[in-house]
Length: 189
Image (tube, rainbow, N blue to C red):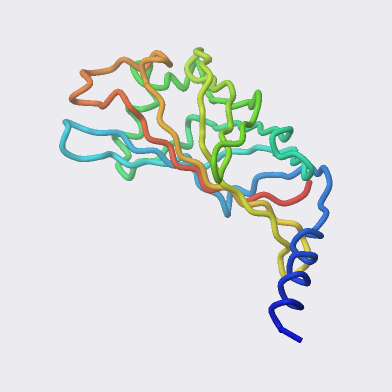
C-alpha cells in the first residue's frame, strides 16, 4: 500500500473537520493588543505613536467571517509618541481636541473577503467627523494552553487626517496620510 494514498485522504478529512467554534463574542485585551500609527514629519522622518488605552469587542461568526462585527473605543488622552510636549499638543484643538472630543470610536459595517485575507469596513469617528475606513486584515483563532479560544488579528490601513478635521500645519510639516497598524488579541467575554 502506498503511504501517500493513506496520509493524503486522512489529512484531508482532519483539515475539513476543523474546529467548530460557532458564533462567539470576544473582548479585546489591551495588554496583548496594540493600536499604533505613523505620520511623516517634515518629509524626512516618521513620528510613531500609539494609544495606550482602548476597549473593544468582536462578534465572531465561525461559519461566515464576513458576518462578524467589531467595535472599538479609544480615549484620546492615551495617545503617546514618546515626547510629552508633543503628546500634550496632540490634545489641543488643532489636533484631536480632546477636551471637546475625548474619544474616537470605530464601528464596523461589513467585512469583505479579499484574496488571502479580509477587509474590515466601518465608521471611524474622530474629532466630531465620521468617515468610513477600510482596514485589510488577517486573523487566526486557536486555543490557549488553558483551552481558552483566542482570536488574533493584524490590520493595516491609511487615513487622511484632513477627513477628520485635523488640519494643523502643512502636509510637509505634518503628513496628510496616517498609517495605522493594529495587533489585536481577544478572548471570550
